[in-house]
Amino acid sequence: MRLKLLAASLMLTAASTSVNYPKTITSRVEPAPCVVGRTAAPIGFWTWPANSHINIYLREPDFSSDYLSAVKLAVENWDAAAIENGSNVRFSFRGLTLETTTADDDLTIIRGDVYDKKIKHLAVLQAHSLKSNRLINYALVIVDSRVKNPEVLTNIVVHELGHSLGLLDCNSCSRKGTAMSLLKTANESNGIEGPTACDKIAVLAAYRELALHIRPTTATASTDLR
Image 1 (cartoon, rainbow, N blue to C red):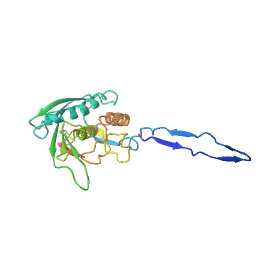
Image 2 (image 1 turned 90 degrees about the vertical axis):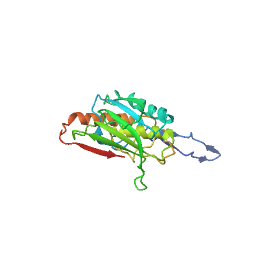
Image 3 (image 1 turned 30 degrees about the vertical axis):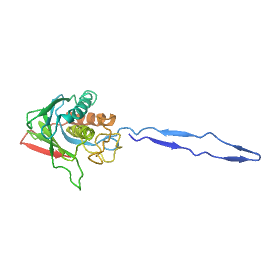
Image 4 (image 1 turned 60 degrees about the vertical axis):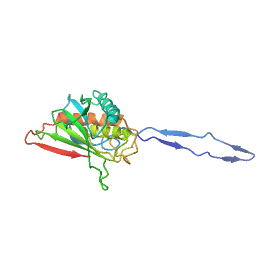
């Protein structure tokens, strides 16, 4: 959320032989409310089914044990918000794996060539819906090889898990107000280690929307979201 401070200037009033100095008036604008699609992330991406329990793995040798705590932090912070955000999607970090897992309710974090000078994304969520109903069966998060900073990896995992709960990128949002804004560089953390208040509200809206729609269940599909 963006906090703005408005400071009234000091005014001087002259009167015959004296000068009066009124008090400086400082007023604060309250943080903008979380409005989905404006001050909070828009919704519309595929989601894990409500009440799912998602297992998250970090593939080696793409990543070493040095990155375990960075991923665990992001996963635990989203997991802690499962009830509050209305999804009841629970996340568990299972540690390192030698394989890319494609079982139901599995998400594997791997490395790959993602960054593009035009798009400038450092990771992509590849979600697979086996029944083409926009409900995710399993997913991959592909992190660009230039990401070496564990703190940035935390930011990325928080962002991509937000996508898996239905959130889209929000370039117009305050950078401190959502995990769904883009990172500036591969080496500079944005300080976001979990969902913000606005992110939780947006996920709540996504799962309310999910509950209102019956989706088709034919064919196999997959999609990417950066």
